[in-house]
Structure formats: structure tokens, C-alpha cells
Length: 502
Image (tube, rainbow, N blue to C red):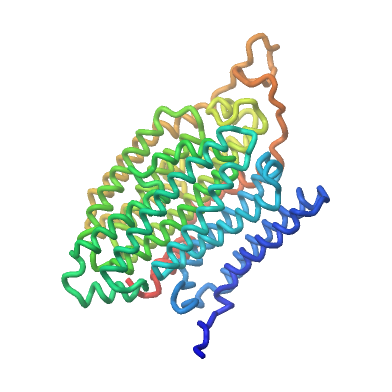
């Protein structure tokens, strides 16, 4: 009888930690003890993410194929793991006193988040078409439910339903694309697909393969919020619970772009002359659509949703060029995008709890005078996302522009600069609101800290130390990585090697 596939449990340990933690918190959530559900479950969820992060640090530099080459645990996978785990830990803190875990049950909420993170790790490490699709589904299905976990709020249920429908269409499209690629190349393994492309001269222009690539671009474009497959993003980001939105906006992009780097820059690299100009055109459309769409937004979550579309266009430039520099630039930007967004979403969670204005831009009016820590965190986040010098966003965009120019796509670097200039209009609008004193409510006594337009029946609550910690630390990281980017450069350089396959 044939032996089963050998399993490298050491390299697989981060995935085991995430799935094991999901089982533990799901079972603990069944207990009737309120402290166990409301305190122990989030703590163990946070510990699960931290354990996976620590195991990833332990395996750094110990590259290896997993489960008969279905996955690869290398620096690219591990850097995506670091981004996912940091996003997960931050989202656990942001949701600690939130409504969504109480309404959906704490055990289920945190188990779904951990399971989705496990899917992101599988997706990022995929070196096989089958594993790619399994990772995408393991990532997506828990997120469909998480978006609808504020079950007494219609917009949250609507968000989950929209994401389910659009996500299912994207998954089906991707599955068709992967099937066409397999039909053309005769293999599901990425390196074998690349070998087939090199050995069979006409395969790179084969209609079956090109159809598969086109459908795969559409399917992954839905997941990464690439225009014109981005339509779901503003509604889903706005309707989902804010901690879930923060997790989706950061961790999902890391996994999606990590697998795009593997699929296009490893398996399909010899067909780059065909798909490269198409992805470059999509990047240009995405940058323009995202930045223009954000201009008229009054909701911070919708503004950041349109911003995430534009940011996806910037990152796509690193995939287009098919060079190690492009991979490094993309992974570096994913890391700085994480801290900039966590700072912004941390402030939004705090203001949702402290005011009756939800995620409106009016909720941050006068924030610098009222809450300087939150004000500075949001200011640094907006400046970083806009690409202002001395912030991590500036270094990241400069890195992407360098990769575009080096890969003979200098015009795409110019598009990135133009897009960044357009983005100043809406990022600076948020900063201006924070540095403006709030207007008192009509009829209020002088000095009353109630904003005009606030909901009089709202029950403001303190944001909580954990929310302030996420916003403050992420804001500080945005500044520190803009001034001292070298440690992150070193991580990105190792991740950009793709185990020497490029």
C-alpha cells in the first residue's frame, strides 16, 4: 500500500496554531460563564494569532515544500503570515468590547476570524491551483458571515449578503480560470506550469491558456478590489462591523497579492508579455477609479474603501513588472498599508463608541483638541496613505515607482504619482476636519462637548485602552517606518526572492 504524503509539521505549525486556536475558542464560547466568553475567548484568540506569528518567526529562513508541493513555507508566505497575524491581533483588540461578538456569540466570532486567517495563510503559500482555490474559499466563507455579525443592524446583514453574492461570482470565475489553465498546461503545480510554458513555445499564446489567465485575473480582482471588479467594496466596508472591515481591508489584501505574485510571477512568468500590459491597464483604471470615487465621500469607512481600491492599483504595479524588485516593493507596501489602515480604523472604532455620529467625517471634527493621541494617529494615517514624505506610505510608493521604472513601465510610475496627487483632496479633507474646532449642538451651553448632528439617544462609551493602543501604535509605526524603513526593507528583500524562482 502506498504511503501517504510526508508532512513537515514544523513548517506547518503556524497553520496548525491558527486552526487549533479556532477550535479552542469555539468550544470555550459554549460555556455559560460570562467572563469566560467575554474575556477568555478574546484573550485566547489574540494568543492564537500571537502564537502563529511566533512560529512564523521561528521558521524564518527554513524554507520547505508542504504536503507534496501543494504549499510552500518560504519568506513570502511568512511575511504574508506576519501581516495577517498583526491584522488579526489588532482586530481582536478592536472587537473586544464591540457589539458584533455579543450578538453573534464570542466563540463563533473569533473562531471565524482565526479560520479566515488560516485560509489566508493557505492562499499565500499556495503553489498548486487546487490549493489556491481551497485557500480562497477557506478565507472567504468565514468573512461572509463576519460581515453580518451585527445581526440587529440591517446594513450589516446587507453587507454580508452582498459580499456572499459577489464573492461567490468571483470564486466561480476564478475556478473556471484555473480549470482552463490546467487544461492548457496539463499541470496544477506552479513550477510544472512554468516549465510547460518554457518548453512549449506556442503555449504562451494558446487561446485556452489566455482565457484561463483572463478569468483568473477577474476572480482575483474581485478579492483584491481591483477595478472594475470593486463594486462591492464601499457597501461591504461600510456595512460590516468596523473591526471586521479593518481585518478585511488589510489581511485579505496581503493574501490576495501574495498569491497573485506566485501565480503570475512564477507559474505564468513566461507569458508576461501577454498579461503584463493587461494588468498595467487594470492598475491604471483602478488608481483612477479609486481616487475619484473617494472624493465625494462623507463616510470614513466608504472613503477608506475607495482608498483601498486605489491602493490595490498601486500594489498591482509590483505584480506587473515580474521582477524581484516588484515582489519586494509589493510586500513592503502591504506591510506599511497594514499599519496605516489599522491607525485609521482604530480611530473610527473609538469615535463610533464616543460619539453619536458613527463613521461620518463629522465624528472626527475637532479631534486634535479633544483627543490628541487619536488625532495624531489619524493624521499620520492620512498623510501616509497620501504618500507624504517622512511617512511609511511615501517610502512604499517610492519603492513601487522604482520597481515600475526598472521593469520598463515608467508610465505606470507616473500614474501612481498622479493618483497620489488626486488623493490629497480627500485625505487632507479628513485632516482639516480634525484640526477644526467642533461646532456645538444648537442650544447647547458654551463649552458643551456635544457635536452638532449627534444622535441624542446614543449612549457614548469610552473607547477602551485596547482601541487607543491599536490606533496609537499603528500611527507611530507609520511615522517610524517612514524614517527608519531599513528593517522592513530587509524583510521585503528576503520575501522578494521567491525562493530563487524568479
